[in-house]
Length: 139
Image (cartoon, rainbow, N blue to C red):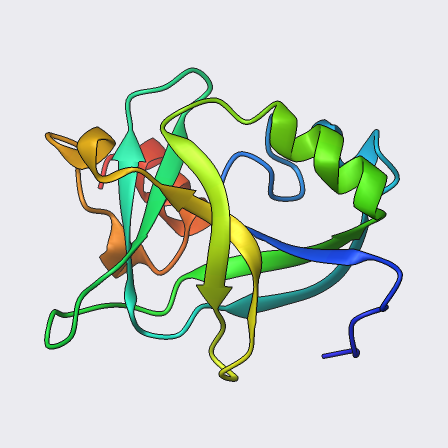
């Protein structure tokens, strides 16, 4: 993975903002640059939220709870672009710190726990694209 540009903010996305997904334009319209595809540490779970467009909710699990590595894309934005991007994020999503498989941490999407009630756990798919593909195929 390339080192972070100190003049830009690195952001991990895991769902509707991934390349080819319906909200990716919110990054590209701000001049964001895709710098890597990687995974979170194996301390996360992903749930399919009932939103339009469909989005996942990424949550870190507590000590001793089973977690998974979840595929994420890392994007870089200018600080101003990052600020306007974050300002438009609707609840129950937000930006917090996400630990990556290499042990580093970056800004990234996280989900408020209240939204997980009744939301299917799709962590075993390993990422949002894999979940969507399995859902489209009926399993």
